[in-house]
Image (tube, rainbow, N blue to C red; front, side, top):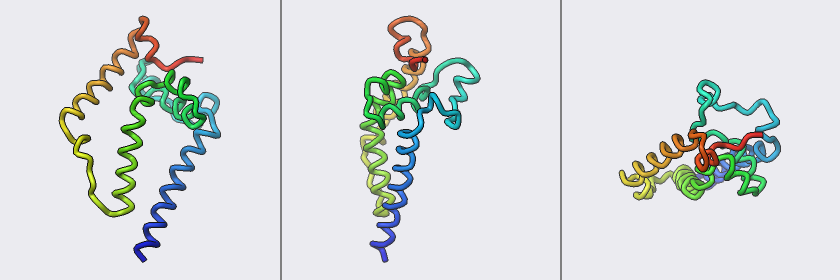
Length: 139
């Protein structure tokens, strides 16, 4: 019974992740209107740290790293951390464990990463080269 539940959990997680990747593979956020635009950019005209992430994900599932980096370099550089942390979360969910990587819970890591995100947010809104390269590319 436990094995069946584990297989069902893995199947549901796989279907959800595959559906999301397939959505970004099949539809380009630039051309489709059902993707949600950034509310921060809509209200202020400035770029948040996540601006360009949907377009970057579309490029990543097509294995176009250069274009993904042009849309959101922070997302591309954060992928190893993101994939590792999602993997640990899924492992804990499937196996009902509480495994944690202590590195992610250290104040040094948290404050450093938060500082990088805030610096990225500020720098990508400065309209002077080389900072303008951090903003998502426009059509």
